[in-house]
Amino acid sequence: MANGQDIELSIVIPVLNEADNLQQLYDEICNTADGRYSYEILFIDDGSTDNSFAVLSKILQNSERVRVIRFRRNFGQTAALSAGFEHARGRIIIPLDADGQNDPADIPRLIEKLNEGYDIVSGWRRKRHDNVFTRKLPSWAANRLIAAITGVKLHDFGCTLKVYRATSLKEIRLYGEMHRFIPALASWSGEKVSELVVNHRPRTKGVAKYGLARTLKVVLDLITIKFLMSFSTKPIYIFGGLGVLSILGASLSGTAVLYQKFISTSHLSMNRNPLLVLTAMLITASIQFILMGLLAEMLVRTYHESQDRPIYVIEKIFESENKV
Image (cartoon, rainbow, N blue to C red; front, side, top):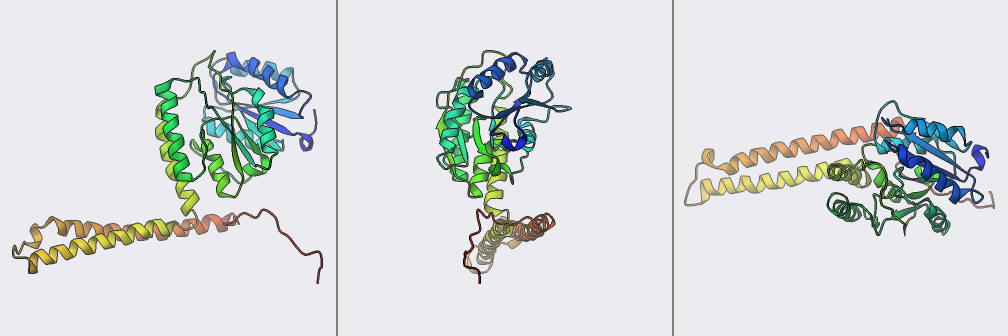
């Protein structure tokens, strides 16, 4: 096997109870990549309780291209992918699902697209072989919501089959269910993202691990992503903005209370006016929002300064050859 510096591809495969699919998937990857690329395959056993690790151990014994990372318990797909990305040694990183629905034969086409000048090429499962109500419809809605909020116009954020330049993943840290948002986070840093239709095959063995409950997690993570992309270095803008709106609302409701008490013919008593309670609530909310924004500003500054982490991303520095 080539040394770490010579590896072109790192194929990262999270595994959770997929014993029946692993050998066939491994064979398909080898049929696609042998003689074409220098590559490694990283299987991440995410706390499988079936015979998956035994199958992986057998594959490992028969191939010098394979590495297996075994978790002590199930940490989730995002954690498995994060571990794979961290330990990958290739210049190009390609995650694949272990259930066999992603087709390894699509890898060369994705790499060709990447070589057209992109940093990330995402697979698009245009013809999905999944349940309409529990998988396809929620995915359709989530993809359009993600595209609208992040501004990254992809059709299929949830497709695991993507091709990344290793440098594109260097600064990205994954939490929760955020692996699907990598193209959006990378695009925010200036990476070039494209999309290509890929083959999606029906599951023939094993049981699907995800259902409708995952949609709620996606929505909650999307709120986090939007905040990170738009306000991670200026949180006072969002919290302070909410505080200003609360002050304006308090001013309007307070003015209405005074008008009804002293100018209107009704002379409504202030202590019986619900608008007075609303005014007090909005004043309290405005103070809390502004203080929250100030605290967030302090946390953001501490985060960036403690890690010596810049708030920008440099692609390249150009200098004149005519030195003074």
